[in-house]
Image 1: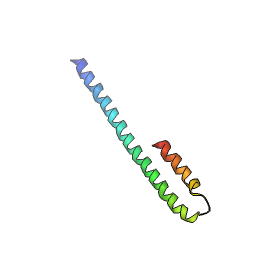
Image 2: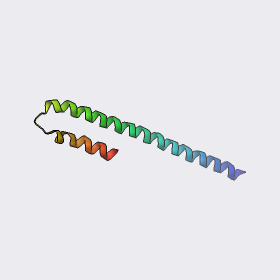
Image 3: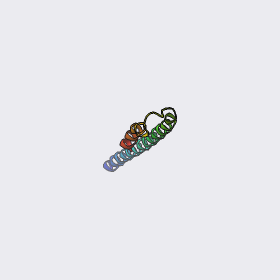
Length: 70
């Protein structure tokens, strides 16, 4: 009986751990999406001011960050 009680609490703890990891992964992925989105907006705004630089040069940094994360 004590063993069942102990196993129940261990399983409950493990499930809580798994759920916590899922929540953290969800918020981190949401954060990554937000950063990529903001970088793309920033690039569009700076493209207007930096017409001398090529379009490819301006997109390298956000592409690297977003593709590496996603």
